[in-house]
Image (tube, rainbow, N blue to C red; front, top):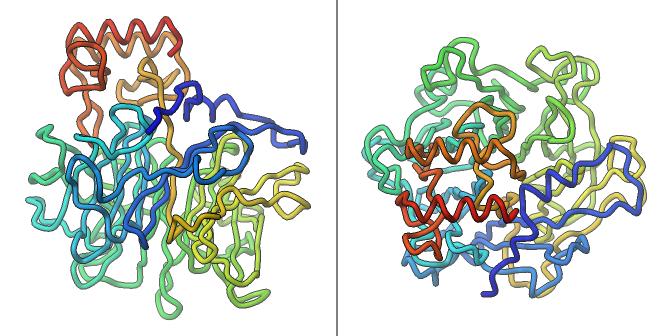
Length: 460
């Protein structure tokens, strides 16, 4: 496979594409890369708008990211239905198939645009793990500001509803040992037996999580979005006051939660999120995109004007599953029935996506190579010298798309302390191998320092 040019840096291009809310039709858009799960063909795909024309040109811009022919010999995914990508490119994928019931750890170490090479894939946690946690039905993956990985599990006969934190404590590349998969929100909020909750995706703003729930139609209906914050620093978010309703009723906003899967941060607006849902009005099977905004800062989106319907469609053969938004205002939605990804653009600046030409197809699967279009996530390709977030005092904050003095200071500190990121225990200062010509090798040597300096002053 031809290596992907590093001139289109995922995080950097997205941050640089930040624009004002009012967008003219002539607006140019930064190219994006998306990892997409395919449950039909047991694989993950990457769609990459390399030429920046706003659509995926097949077949060149559709490549396999992970599948059965991987050189590591990792058993391929069978029912990948949860996906998350960290700001340094680490990919976590949850598999619900009874033969897997696991979470994959995937990383493109050599920069060729996939995780098909030796050492780039592993099943990180599976049945029989020493923590005794069952990921029988993983539904969502998210990362907090410190790079910690979180997996949402939907309860069934093999496991309970819960949100679990993953951390590689022994640095062996998995989460199979005791304590490496730990309950973050569990019995105190979901119950000791599976009850009305139907938890799905999770996203984070800093270290605060927002979880989508699609609870039942009768009795104790829990559907909506919940806010999770570890207030007492005990590495849990299910103590009193830590797991709270964010949007669970129509309240004063007038927009009621319905069944749906997706939730994501709106990076264009402070304290804002997008959720997908399916309702019966104006007609059965209407797919809606709701924007939630905590306008008054009280920790929920249930006050006047805080929940707004910004797009809907009642067309047949359309089933919305996942939603992701960019700092430039674009919102992407996967259509599982149509096996495509659409993009919404607010061209007239009214905050909605119902105007002429504001919806278009981003990926349409013209060659029918993709069998299932369900969960997806943006995938950044970061520069070796981008190791920290500008303005953050946290050594573990990770890349932000810009090369500044903060990156230099953090790298030097990480080099001498051998600091590691949470979740996968990656050495922050490990950017190359001993000869200084290959990918990171799990050790920190002078070659890493030299390679970082070269990258820092060359601008990648």
